[in-house]
Length: 147
Image (cartoon, rainbow, N blue to C red; front, side):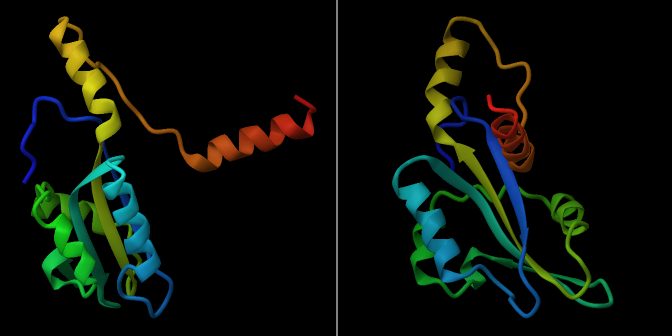
């Protein structure tokens, strides 16, 4: 469970749809996630696997249902912040007959700045995410133009 709520960094999520026939995160995906946790770059707040049947029915698997044993270390930090409605909304992105992983995490590196801002009476009034593809496209366009 998350212990220090007042100093949380920005919270993000991903829904990763797996290729046909794949029903959970790969070992390399889990290891990459654990590396970020071990380096204290992120704190995983929720982790699920969603499986949508061809008829649209949804099965939800939580961390204790997953087979990768090393993930058990995350269980203590999970806040399990996604409510049933949140899960249903995220599952809308998953195609019928497909499975997807859902990861919700805190960017812990930014938390100290958020606390420092709060201590002087400042507040974060907006935050957002720029799609990676948009940044890559901009960089590639700049290179083509010789910038």
